[in-house]
Length: 356
Image 1 (tube, rainbow, N blue to C red):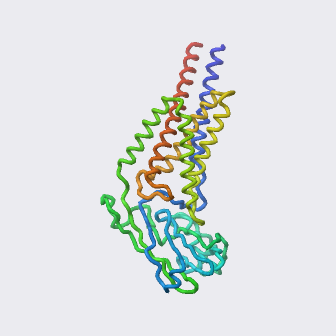
Image 2: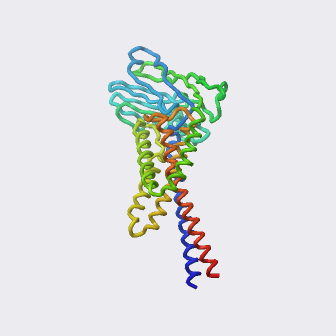
Image 3: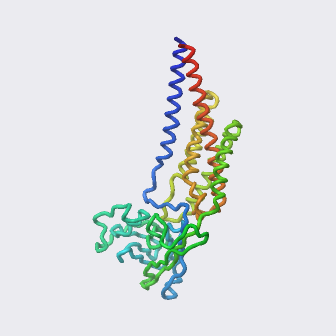
């Protein structure tokens, strides 16, 4: 009878920890997406401002720049200057006041269409958003700087643009664009170009996969190096997430996973450290569970391995190396967790066989 009770306890333990690990995996995968669905991410496209055309005094008064490859147009307006940016139907859309206040017209269809990369295909424009309706201004920024996703500066399809051949290892032009605006009442156009860039050498994905797999196996075998590796992964991924988020100007969307996942990893490791003396078994399981947010963070950033442009101030080669290292630590923890589950399962089966 005691053997049967022990076997039952083993099976219960396996079920409990399998549920916890699966629940943790589901939780980090279901990190809520940002309210505005176009955070800058790795891409093949670079959109850039080539000129500001118009009267010299008006054109020189503003500073325009594209950030995140082709994700956002940033406009900087000095104090004392006013700018009005129309939407796609020439309706009032954005207003930069002389005191630095920036306001968006909530009744502009562009305000809602710009919430998703492909516009009307992914968003529902409210019934009261009408290009002919009187503006309903809402202040969104101060300091005379604001960024917004503008469909005029990028290609409006997830497929390749016509004329772009991915087999050609060279930058290829996609389109020329222009955005009209009024600067102190004078007509100005911010003009630019969109260019598709080929991906990096396939050596990068292969090298990252090798580091993640072989490094993970090596860390899992070493045992003592696993926790320091996970702490390093948390600090590295967190630093990259903070640097990328901090570099985004007002109005740009953030990718919450870049901050939430490293925080989750640190929290799980802290719980493991707190449990290490009174509940050493629990601490070991928590260390294994810490691999899940590390792996998911690496998967969120895996586009950096195959795309040439990665938003943020960190060099793309550093991001790629970081993805490989964080994945290695995460894979190691997952291997340790899987091995522990197998050990408990085998022990349970052995006890069950002996009791029978």
